Amino acid sequence: MRTRLVVTFVLGALISAVTATALAYRDARTAVLRRTQDAAVNDVRTRVTAVAADFDLPPDQRSLSRFAAKVSDGLGARIVVARHQDLVAVSDPLADAQDRITPELRAAVRAGDGARFQRVMWRNEPYLVVGMPVTYADGDRRPSGLEVFAITGLRAERDDTAALLDSVRTGILPVVALTALLALLAAGTVLRPVRKLGRATRELAEGDLGSRVPVRGHDELADLARTFNETAGALQASGARLREQEAKARRFVADVSHELRTPLAAMTMVVVVLEEDADQLPPDAARAARTVGTETARLSRLVEDLMEISRFDANAIRRNAAETGLADTVRASLALRGWAERVEVHLDEGVRAVVDRRRIDVIVANLVGNALRHGAPPVTVTLGTVGATDGKWVTLEVADQGPGLPPEARERAFDRFYKAEAARTRSPAGTDGQGSGLGTAIALENARLHGGTIDVAEGAGGGAVFTLRLPLRRAGGDAE
Image (cartoon, rainbow, N blue to C red; front, side, top):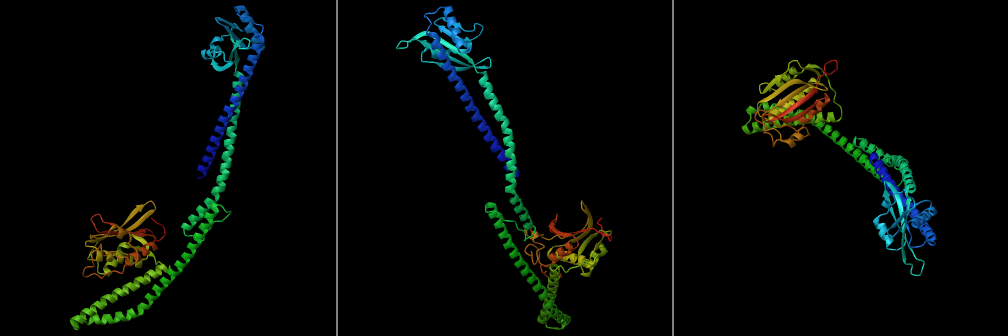
């Protein structure tokens, strides 16, 4: 904006200066030429009248030449041409005067309607030619047939107007420079509050709701700054209220989850007893006992997930990291849940990294369990490393051959409590039931705790592909 303002100011000043120069040059040139023309016409009229009073008509060549010479002497030795019918006399016989008298001027003078003048260029030099007929001094002032032309050089006038134009041109540069300086000062004055407002806006966008701009004056920029401060204040107050409400909601979830653990523990004990004796119960009672057991287990997992999310929200999570062989960790996680026979694994045995083994187990359990519940076999787990410009990364890829996730579901796959069963198959028999909608969110939080991330994409042959990426660090703390 500063550049545009300066360019606009300079262009405006340049256009104004050029326009003023053109007008001044035109007016000055017109005034100089008019003064010269008027003086020349008066001088020629006065001198011709004085000399013609004693001139006898009709003249011969000698008398006409003397007449031209006398008129020229009284006009400061200007070239004078006298014509009478076929006779022509020039005050300076060596001067080539006839070419400077145009047929138009001769015709105008021959018409006998007073003095006439015309500016002509001859051999790249300007001249003023004044012509007038000589009339008898009687009442009707009849033309005598004698015509006089005086030729005056305009070089001095041309040089004067050219010098004026040069001086004005020379003055344009300081004017433009001064205008550019004033434009810079004006741009700085105008843009300084705009820059402050832009800086405060960026700080506000980065989360600094206490950012404000000083308000000075009563112009439009001051009104804009005042409006910004009011908006920032409203956002700060609204953000404080939202944070307070969010903290209350988190405390509520944590408290409820904690309070549910005690009755759930008692319910689980009762359910275990009922499930052990289910075979001795009537069919309806046995089915009810197993249903209660399944739902109680599901409720227990939901409570545990809620408490885990609450700990992440409260920043109460700490890593218990140690250098671990990731292939063994993945294998142990699958075996613990009885999935080893249902999952194809491709594990790089040499991958070791500093991780919290329990949290890696949570990630694997959530991603593989999600694939088994909602995807279709074969489910494959691939562990390896990839190189990048920022170091080496561990990648754990979990893929299935199910219907996959539509684009809108992939965008929300890690949202809390989001489920996409409409796009995925229902839980097949033998799985551990429907998820809580928190599994992928917990997996992502654990990945971020390690400085990594989880992405979801569509597989090349269909299905969904979840990819865990973790920075490969050894016990020394440096990434390979």
